[in-house]
Length: 398
Image 1 (cartoon, rainbow, N blue to C red):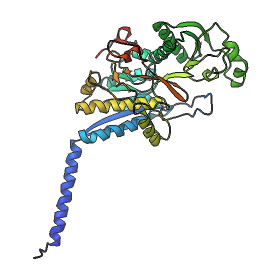
Image 2 (image 1 turned 45 degrees about the horizontal axis):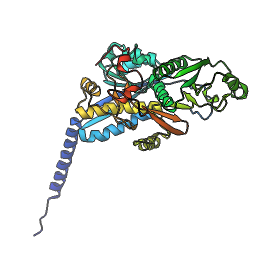
Image 3 (image 1 turned 90 degrees about the vertical axis):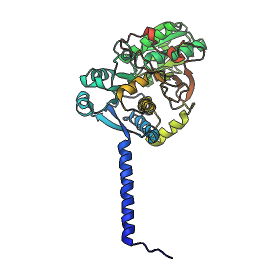
Image 4 (image 1 turned 180 degrees about the vertical axis):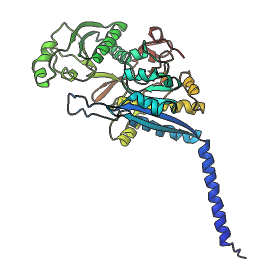
């Protein structure tokens, strides 16, 4: 016998079913734990470049953070957590402190900052900043990890000391022990030169001569005479250049009086990330990033990616969004962050620096990864790079 169902009854059942689904979704949404993350940066002037091949990238950092949010939310589907990124890009003539006070303070517990060192500490010292955790994704200053350190700031990029130590370890392996150091005119060049001197002393290298670069930045004149005459010094194994702005360093290769390799800020460089790096799953994230951003991942993109992933890792493991719980976990022995460089990454408890391998890369090839085999440490070989705890002048501790 065929049963005839009242059409009105059918409509009522469908309506009740839809209401039930909506109710379930609302309950599910309410049950989700939301972790809000702010990204604070300021527009930059387009700097002078040595070559037309060096395109200015105005959004360095942002695509890395956005990719990490996607990865965090993939895991968050299973832990009932949602990660939300809000970007605050201050105009070139804008006030970063005002933006922080008005739009971020009291509303976000986790803040990525892509700013110069002096602005980072100004923000970190604000009363409202004491109740949040700041992730520095831009600076390489040793001072921020030592005498100028702040307990509410974590640093994602390797500092200058870590980079110089990575180069020194590889030079020691190659037995290229005699260095000729060439220093540019900027404050950043002076700071990198200090890191090089420290690394040379630490690993038994000899700086046979130092010279400031005082010649023209005109490529035509430089390649004709300046470099050849400039590099007629006592015998050395390798030329170390300190030119963070890229004003002259590229002129040195293939133009020295003697045939010598160039390392430092040009030639063989020490870096957190590089397009040539493909090991340990790096090729996969390189491709994902390039598909999303339309360009290669830069160091600041990598740092922002790691910062957001560190928050995600801590939140996932603790099933919490509480600032103190997440910060405590990040500094615990259990914290291990995948960085696509072989060893798991973790934060140094004495200064907030992310310990990590450092890539040694030429412009179109990956040469080595530091720490180099054979350099040992009682806790972790990663602490052979940069300031170890007994050497640190940072006064805060977890």
